Amino acid sequence: MTGPVVVIGDALIDELRDEHGVREFVGGAALNVAVGLSRLGLPTTLIAMVGDDEPGGRIRTYLDDYGVGLLATASPAGTARAVSTRVDGEPAYEFNAAARGRRIRYGDAERDAIAAAAATVVSCVAFDDTEQTQELAGALSDIGGLVAIDPNPRAGMMRDREQFVHGFEQVVVSADLVKVGDDDAALLYGIPLDELAHRLRSAGAAAVLATRGADGASVFAHGVEVSRPIATASAPIIDTMGAGDAVLSASVASLLAAVPSDEAAWGDLLAGAMDVAAATCRFEGALLRLPSALAGLGEGFVGS
Image (cartoon, rainbow, N blue to C red; front, side, top):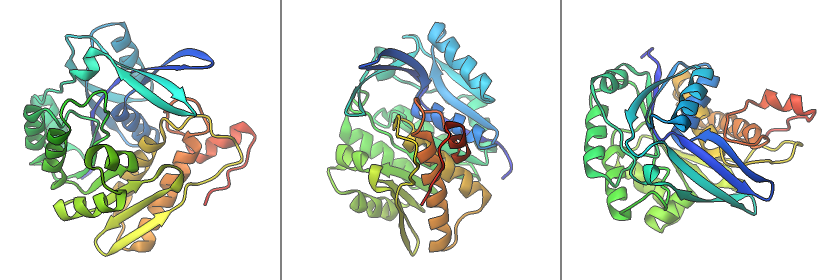
């Protein structure tokens, strides 16, 4: 497949509150991945709910600035917003009514874009909404490109945990790559991350990318279990908000270049994704950064 990449999920305004005051960023996990893929040189379209209001206008302008197309579902409640308060560097989130009532519609334009995509990435959708999940599964059923899924659950947006898990596992069977983190394993399943990775592989996922925060990441695929530590840099960590989205973006870009066939190739994919995540964490906000960006900080990139 040679078409663009389609990303399905959330687009919102991140309102950050910490000891320095209040700042706003255009964000959302799916939006971050879409912009990240575009920055990695891939033509990308985002399918997301966006309000017809001033914050929605900022989202549209931001996507335009980074060359990302948008197929927007109208939001009667306005644009979604996440208010994050930082405690020890990690954010605690609260979501507005638009975010809690998120809805994506799959009309002809959306289904055509998905059908023609080289890869479709799903991140932070309402898997606890049975109707939406069925529509998403239907849209994914006829595609020939790669499928990557990140459940990206948020306790403040999730209405029914059991239904979310059920909906998520409905689409796992079509996935070439599923990304889950240790926090996802705890929130959704209450089990260790490695156990969840094996469960998702048994459910039909071709490969599972398991992210462990400061402990790096692992891939579980056919005959492969490989791990890599986080990459390091002499520049200080500023913001971890975009790390997971950067890992997913870099991993999808690598898969489109060549699907790994052995442990060494999966290890190279992980190491590259860790390098991108490390660079992203050296800047405020969730915008994907390449390791070369650290040269602008006057610090050398170490890597691992």
